[in-house]
Image (tube, rainbow, N blue to C red; front, side):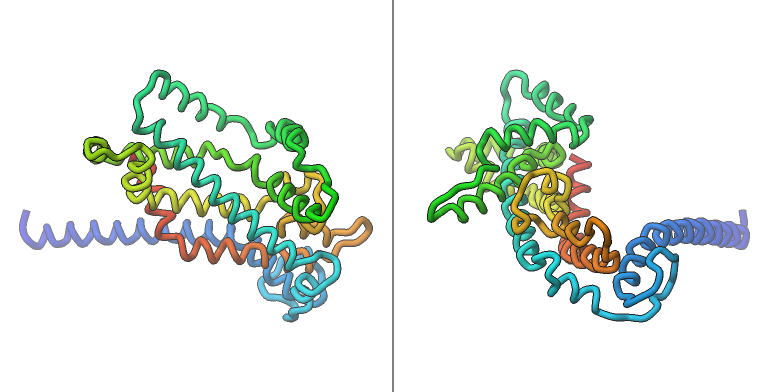
Length: 300
């Protein structure tokens, strides 16, 4: 084959590669637009002062901050109290669930004992059960623990607040997905590092804290982002519990904007947009760790 023929062949291959890449990007752009349009429609509808709510549109029929003001400063829902509730619930939930998953994954990954793999696969099998399957059991357990009781006395309001936060957070602390992800990350840690630490006299908790956690940090960060999204969006469980309306998280409390006989749909959409913003911010700042963590867990 001559030099000219080789150059022509390479040019045709590059042209085919550019064409296939262009088609792939075109398909991905169409899919992205289809997926993003509902959120875009929610945003522009929340900005409209008047007009039909259910008409598809590309631009809003006017722009006004009245709907956002109605949510933040309105009397229908205690917005800032619910925002604080969501922050407290997310802080407690993410901290405790990540700690429990990181601790439980270590013996299942690096410690040897009879039935280790059987225990792990038995736990993993529970993934097939839907979350709704545990609602009744969790509700009964929460009531048996006294977390739904009203306390009297000088410290009654404080105890009620703590117990209701605990009622929301406790049933979601054990995460099978987090256990799986972190265990996979632990499996990628060389056993020689652990053996060297044990020879130096390090205890298991010291090995976990000084060796395993730093090496599995990207996966732990990815799991923390997933847990933040889950706790921030906690809706169904918070609505099932007989909580004080002042103790509802933001995503569940916004349902109060829907009345029995009328609903301020634009205010609901404004509240939805406000609820989504913290998730977008957290994911924007943690995207690098999120992708790196999931990649490390899959490779492990």
